[in-house]
Amino acid sequence: MKKVIFTFAIIFILQNKAFTQIEMHLTVPIGATFIFPYAEGTKLIQTKPYFIHYDAMYYSAVTYNVGALMQVGHRFDLKYETGVTSISLLADIGYSQEILGVRYYNSVKKYINAESTSLHTLNLGIIPKVNLYFPKMKIPLSIGFGGGVKIPLSGTRYLLKNSGEEIIEDLSYQDIKEIFLHPFMPYVKLTVDTYYYVSDSIALTIGLYGSYNFGMQYDTEKLNAEGSSEDFHLQPLELTEYGYSSFDIGLTFGISFGRPNPKLKK
Image (cartoon, rainbow, N blue to C red; front, side, top):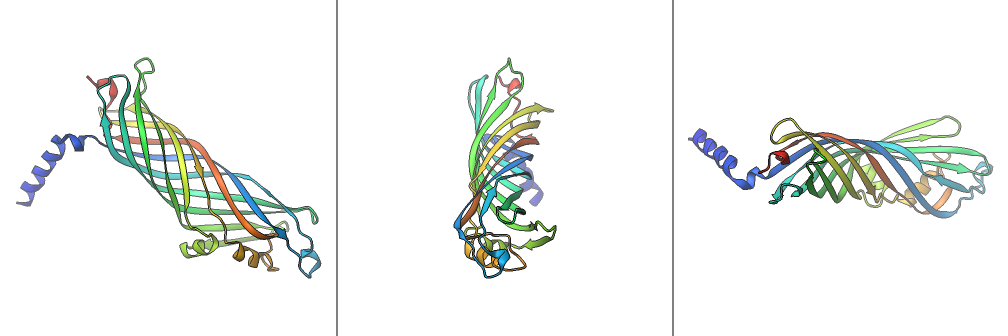
């Protein structure tokens, strides 16, 4: 009986137009991340000579980003054979590694400290896509614009002092909640993908993406407490606000299922 029900279910799915318009894309984004830190605060004055009268400059840094994403959703086919052939509404789900880097320069002692935090994030978002095909271009493409949130689940913090001493700290989700005021990063992104079909509805994809991450704000009370420690002095200011935003840009490589080759559309 179960086999009969399963067989009828498969037949229903294959014959139902609503299911035939479901599509899925698996992609690997690889690119560069441009970090834009910002900070406000007052000079930190301590009793020990080497803590007196710090001032600082916070430099932006360039790191990398990599991930694995799945986009799945419904495609709304249009009657046009060229131009805009369909519109897709997709959930954007996956993993990404975010590397946050910043340098601190002290103009009195003439040294630079460096800090980077590697975060493993769960990405949850929505991305509508406009699917295009022009015979003269020969290659179908899609343009998407969407957004969502990145939730850091774990990470690693690397601190490098001017003396060469390196401090490495593993971060759990609970640690991240304590370091940042809000443990999630809103983002918006733009994608452009091209499709190279290997069958009627399976294609290899290559694309470009740009994503702006609104970042997270640090808990400055915790950072100030760390900064006043002799063993962990990387924060030269008595901070009132400290955070960052970032911009990602790069390439995507993947495979697409369910979107029919527009060259075969009649």
